[in-house]
Image (cartoon, rainbow, N blue to C red; front, side, top):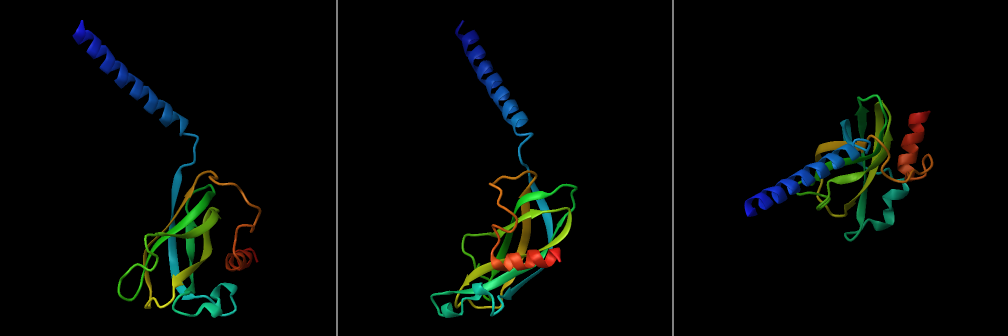
Length: 169
């Protein structure tokens, strides 16, 4: 009797676990899946002097220097990829990471099918020895929106707005 109860309890737990895994799997089928995109033609340059992000008054050791990470992102799929983030490892002249404990460099919003350009403003600690190199540049987004939707250009900074408006022209 004891052996039978132990078997049925263990079997019941395994069956309940399997049922839970099946519910989670089937429930997430309609969820937003992460999608990888191809990033190419990447460059990292100082912000233009006229850009408000350049902040010339902060050109001191305790401040930050403004840089722009530009590139192209390709969405080979047939659907828009939403809420896309860009990840990169940026290194200084000595091979040390410029953005400590951080691979995500920014968000580029939604990426339509095909190739589009992006520009992200980065604040790199002043006094960091250049030239800078970058590697592992990736873009990841979702098959459905995962955050509250803002109006067109509402969530973009002036630099990103200028790039987006230039793409529309």
